[in-house]
View 1 (spheres, rainbow, N blue to C red):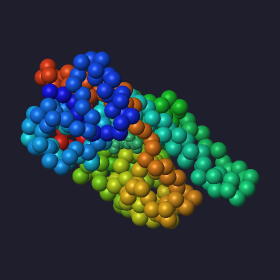
View 2: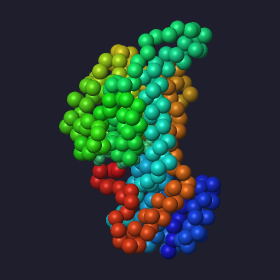
View 3: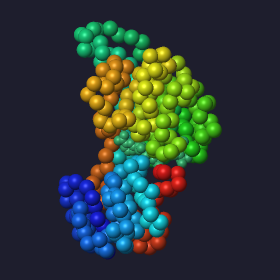
View 4: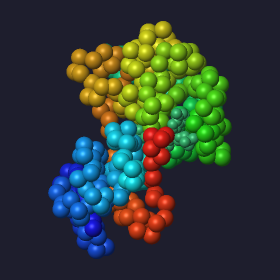
Length: 300
Ligand code: NAP
């Protein structure tokens, strides 16, 4: 009984080495089907019934929106890794500062060789609203709060760090009204797909900034374009888009108010990934709660 990884050979090399150190049976890409009790992958094969002894599917990333609903008796787990949390936090902090300090305008000026300063905003007291106060949202809140930003949080349950002013699902309008910079760190679920539509963006303060590091399908790009045209949104930085990749002639690449990065905010370090997988296996064998267990009715 062992662990099968579907993934690139560089990741497999690290997983293989660490599994052999701890005596865990490890396979890469192929395994005798009856040997596979744990399957780690970004997307599983269409038919999981080929593995008669499969107990847990381990998603090698944080988001599980690309995963199908698991058949009865198979648990789904997402990876917990400080590496990805910290990388995405760094990207979000960078994007927040870039928008807060008007970098889209200065980058455009730089392309034209134009030396022209504008007003400088203080981060202290500037309001930042973070949607999604899980692992990554909480870390981003801690860093931005430590820099002096006035951080507000929104989550389904209203749960979030103690020192953050939290809003629950029903508090969305009040939350958005204060979100001078809106940061999205939500999982993609049936409830968050298409969330940031025209009506939603209309609730932001005039000239808001938008930082999107959740999943592309949460933000219809046509709605963003209209919000930019009306001035409701002043600028945006997107790491995730719908579709991915954006076509080479997509308007978002050339709009000076928008900065796009190609889904590079974070990735799981291979060593931390396998350590998480081994923690899942240990927990499963001792019938404890699996770290990173996904609630498949909620989708995260
Ligand atoms: P997490 O720990 O599971 O936290 C999810 C948060 O979202 C929780 O605060 C949850 O609220 C909230 N939430 C979920 N559905 C909601 C809804 N309908 N309305 C309001 N709040 C809702 O997730 P995480 O590890 O922080 O990761 C968050 C997401 O970041 C991932 O799912 C992925 O999409 C994205 N991500 C992107 C990259 C990248 O490279 N761009 C990398 C990693 C992750 P409750 O606590 O109340 O349930």
